Picture 1 (cartoon, protein in one colour):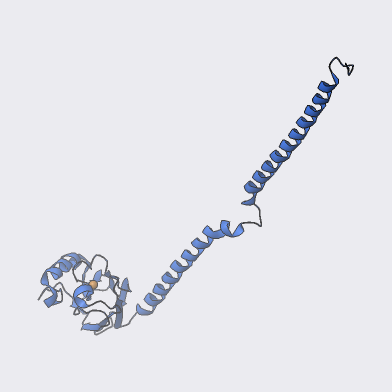
Picture 2 (picture 1 turned 90 degrees about the vertical axis):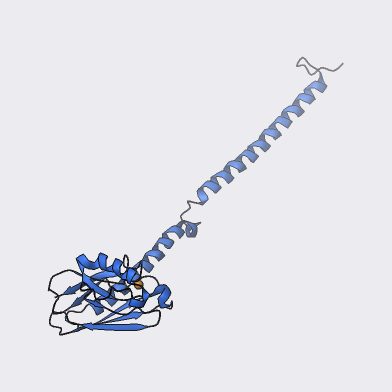
Length: 217
Ligand code: CU
């Protein structure tokens, strides 16, 4: 009968040592695994915010905004430049463009009271036909604009959407379609410097958008 001197058998002592060694190994292994997991977690979390990594993805939204702003600015600059060219004081020859998007390219037209006669040329830069996207250029004073526009719609395509013999109509062109142009010449003797006049397209439904101010200076 052997005795370790510790109060239990030699075999049980060996078994205890082996068990403790096993526990130590198990603990070390677990620590290493846990350490790796924490390390991976930290890397994943900080990766997005690292000053050099992933920078492209973080900057993307800013770049999209910059691009859109640039497009808007360029369009504004273009239309402003055109408007500046075509509202020159004293010009008795006015040119205005319309398109397939229900737009005139001018919001304001200015003529000099010195003009014996004013000629307005309307161009249609679109491609749609006159019965679908037709445009004309009609001039009235501000107060007559709405009632004449509505009466114009009722007058029908055969009358270029302009009421026949209506004294409120100061000038009007024919209706044109894409690729066409038309013009009207008229005296501005009856127009008063400083009064408010409106030009518009009387094709049904267009006058709400296709309109602008006509000024005599
Ligand atoms: Cu129109």
